[in-house]
Image 1 (tube, helix red, strand yellow):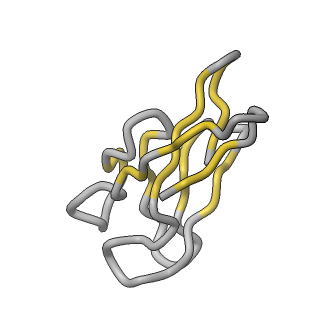
Image 2 (spheres, helix red, strand yellow; image 1 turned 135 degrees about the vertical axis):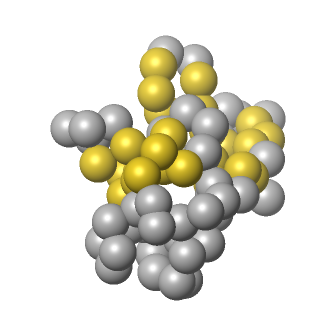
Length: 73
């Protein structure tokens, strides 16, 4: 889950579609990056920005609980 701006949250599957490595958020570059082969994904949409991945990250739904906690499904 990423918090790109006040009141906005996005969540994506953390598995790179290229080779199955776990991706991470690079706050300095504001991209989601794969440490295995260098793929980069748009942190707002999950779309591929730099390959070798040929498809983006799967977007996950976010729900807010009654006390303001967030749940990803």
